[in-house]
Length: 263
Length: 256
Image (cartoon, rainbow over all chains, first blue to last red; front, side, top):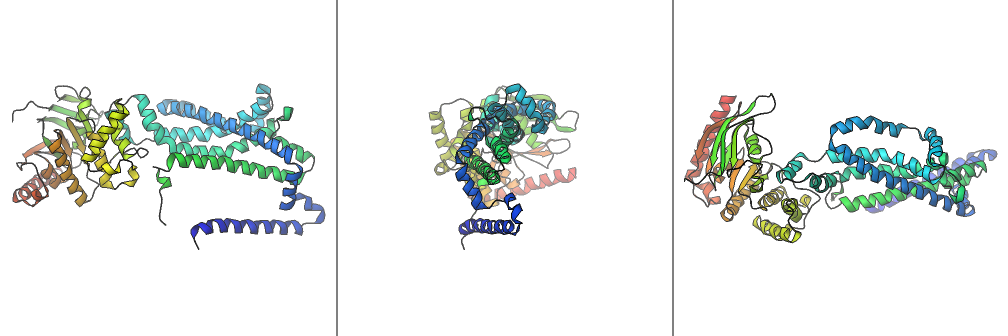
């Protein structure tokens, strides 16, 4: 059997087994407890009943995730460039960068609400904070890991500092940047969801998936909660998928990780 | 030959910080067109000497003049070929070769013409659009040499460029290098571990000794250019390889 076919059949088979196990578990439960685990069918049905609110929420969360993600990319690129200039700058700033990552969102959210108000702004800031660290750490590492001979080659030809950064260090850092970007892409929708859950607002239809989850849970709409989780997963797959595609576009010509092997 | 010296080293000494002496009062004069091989046991400072000439590292004492100027001032006349091909993997072969010109601010049109010319010189004109990872080790090294030649340097510095290649490829590249030199008049400093390579390529071989690095002997290679694969079969060539090997062994056993 060809490898390609296996790559489709195997995950499909796993999925079927998983769904069967799901139904088995559900129907082995006591009747009065069955509401705790809706069947896949009930979850799909809940998409129909809550389609509008789910779609609106997904759109809002996507907006927050995208803005926070994009902001993290821009700011982390600038900061990584600064950090790459000197080890003294790195030593001075690294502990605080780590602190930034360690701040628990749940504690920070109420403060953030006071600062920028609930809703999209808070969601964007929280997404930004969650995506920022893996991006800045990986990109910085890439910028300072340039092959020493290549740097000397540039010095030999009296390259300017800017030429060295943009023609050598930045392209050499791309694989590292994309590693950070993949991690950040996984985190962005989760960040937006958590941000929305802790600092979201329904004002002007602005609620996202996190906010919607609170509503469904208060209404005991358990299938809709599962549907919300599914939508978040899809959102995550879209983010990661786009990043994987961009990474392929930027690297497949030359980087060893895309080397074609004949096995 | 009484040509004005192109490279002049006088009592050049190198020490890294408070560390041991790496080079001890090295004096060497190269005339235009010289092909000088630097050979010696590891730690004799031959690569360091090359880096000093390249201006990649300053001398601790002594004077070093290229065409009457410091290595810094003479940067435009210099090209360096590293031990590894040191190609940028994200650039095509043509763009890699054009890089020095790009850094000098030459227009893309000028760059393309020169790149094509030097790539033809190393017989890789048909691989211009390839990426480095699609090339063999020998081809990568030829691209690296083409890049070094792209700014028409007066002085070519080569730091064991063929050390990682197999014997056959190395011999072919040696022949190609000499063939290119027939067309372009540069002066070469060539660091190598291979006696055969040094004899085949150079008109002068400088044997260096270690701890501290210094010049031990200089040997003149009287073989006439152009040299070809047939040169390697000659009696004279074999005698020279034997003689240089003997000197090198005496230097190495003295160090051991």
